[in-house]
Amino acid sequence: EGIMATLQLPILNWAAAPDSSGGVFLEPYDVKATNDVWKHQVLVFNDTGTRIGIHGKFNVPQNYVGTAAIVVRWTSTATSGDFVADFDYRAVGGNDSESFDQTGNQESVTGTDAAPGAANRRMEFSISLTSSNLAAGDEVQFEFFRDGSAADTIAAAVMVFNIIFQYADA
Image (cartoon, rainbow, N blue to C red; front, side, top):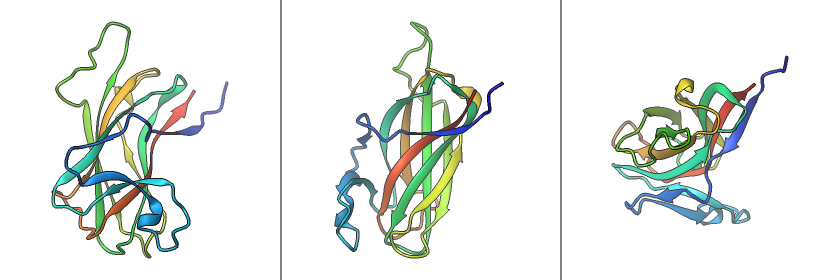
């Protein structure tokens, strides 16, 4: 009998596409960072009073058994307020049995995290998913939003470093 482990799969990949709002975009981190050393891309969600986001997809790993969650790693130059994130998704499985072209999502979940205690500190929170909605090998289509129309009160851009699918294996 094997030991169950918690695994993480980064889901920000080539398929991620910002919405048409103009408020979400990729930008080198050194544009907003103080020290201008680290020039990798971050996903910037500007401060707006609307719901802005990205669209993407990933595959559920073959060793998936459950305990699904989305882990968000982020930062901001703001040190007060809350970041509200929405994750909407649909899992598509089988061979010649489900359509990729659906009109709605399977589940919509929300997570909230308080601003960092100092500018640019690494922040992390998780959003639980309904594990039974997912199966090994499923293709998951998702939308990830900063929800300025809800209780998001950070008065600055939020920079997302990673969005991760976390799960337990067999």
